[in-house]
Each structure stands twice: as structure tokens, then as C-alpha cells.
Length: 286
Ligand code: NAP
Image (cartoon, rainbow, N blue to C red):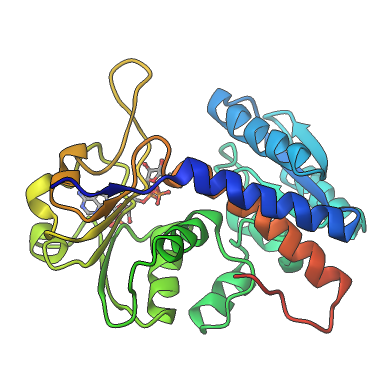
């Protein structure tokens, strides 16, 4: 019997409603996005975030800089937004054009406004088991797992991929919930041996249908983060959709992790806004 599809679109809409209610409570919440250059995919990504912020009732500031912006000018823009009290969340689209030092730019973002959760302070807090602002994709996955009441304590979770924005924070969030976590990557020997033992399998690789149905443990929960451009405009996941015949739960592509990511960046923005208004209280909700 085929497993249950985890509906990220519906859950993402629910999170966005919760965010809108919180924005109304807080009165004013501001999100600033910074995009350097003219990469079309990055423009679409930023437009989606801008629209989501506006729909939630936030003040959305859209800073677009030319591709030849110098590092000093970009850092000055970030410093201005850091100092601007009407900005609660600040998101700089990565990757940056060649020639700009990404680490230096990330480190310039005020940690308390870092709604992508990529500043070393926030990444370090997660590593220490004291999450503050956490990247939207793994945060959204945790929300999906909780919503579908997937048991994590003592479960074997296998995360394929170790990027700073998905794989690593995902592994730490699962560890914090007492899963036994295995992290796989491009040098892992015999990937199938690991994935076949996963009660919860998260694929964040960027390789179309890398995870074949026979790599999935019967009854597992499968989270497909991959967004790979297939033939034409079709977006394909890292997991072969046929895996639904073995999985108990599985996210679709599209309509799974993607909509949750945007919703959780919005949630991070209200979390940041709430924390900035009550600085004696640690950021909550993550
Ligand atoms: P990334 O930075 O390119 O990292 C990919 C990871 O996969 C690396 O750790 C790499 O290992 C590992 N890997 C590559 N080939 C492998 C193989 N054959 N077997 C096992 N591991 C392998 O990518 P990312 O930013 O984490 O994104 C991953 C995918 O998720 C992409 O398709 C991206 O578009 C998608 N994504 C989707 C969302 C969303 O909202 N839906 C958000 C973010 C990302 P090494 O470290 O050894 O190189």
C-alpha cells in the first residue's frame, strides 16, 4: 500500500496564517531582502519571499544591487539595515557574484536579524543544542515531522547531504530531538546500506532521483529536499517518486519542502521581531 503524502503546501499556508496573526499582534514587522546581481532564479526566489512577507502584513524592503557592487558597498548596505530599527529580519541572497567574500558578508549580518540562520553565531548555537534562528528548510522539515507525528526519539535518522544551509542544521535538529543521526555525503561508501536502515530519511543532495525505491526502508518517512531541473521546466526531487510504495510518509516535489521553507523564513522573521522587542527573552519558536 502506498504511503501518505506529506502536504507541504497546505502546512506552509497554515504557518503563514500563524505568522500573519503574529504580525498583527506585534503591530509592525519588517523584512529586508538584499539581492546582488541579475541571476533570474535568484530574482524569482526573492520575489517569492517579498510576496510572502507582504501577504503576512510585513513591511518588505527589497534592496537590489548591481552585479558589480563592491564588497565595501554591500557591507555598508548591510550595516545600514542592521542599524535600522524598522528592519527585524535581514536576508542576503546567496550565492553572491564572484569576487564577493561570502563568509565576510554573512558575518556582517546582525545575528539577531539573521532570518536564514546562517551567521556563525546562530549556527554555533544550534550546534550547542540551544537553537536561536535556524535555516528555514530544516526548520520546516521539523514542523512537517511534528505535524504528521513522526516519532523521532530513538529513531534512526539518515541525512544525505552536509551543506551548511540544509544537511548540517537538519542533522543537529534531529539530534536535539533524540534521533540517532547518520550524515551521508559524496564520499560515503555504500549509501544504500545507510539509507535502508533509516526510519527517517532526509535527502538534500541536488541529484535527480539519487534515492531509488529499493534504497528506502519499508515504513520509513522520506523527506525530499532536492529541487533539480529535469527535462523542460519540470522540477525533480532527489528521491524517485516510486519510493512512496515503500515509505509510510513522503514529501512530494514540488509541494513538499519548498513551500515550508518560505513559510519558515517568515516565521523566523516574527521570531526575530518578537525577540528584539523583548530582549530579556531568548528567541523562541525554534
Ligand atoms: P549542496 O550545498 O550542493 O550540498 C549537496 C550535498 O550533497 C553535499 O554535502 C554533497 O556532499 C552531497 N552529495 C553530492 N552527491 C552525493 C552523492 N552522490 N551521494 C551522497 N551525497 C552526495 O546543496 P544544498 O544547498 O544542501 O541543496 C541540496 C538540494 O536541495 C538541491 O537540489 C537544492 O536545490 C535543494 N534545496 C531545496 C530547498 C527547498 O526549499 N526545497 C532549499 C534548499 C535546497 P559533499 O559535501 O561531500 O560534497
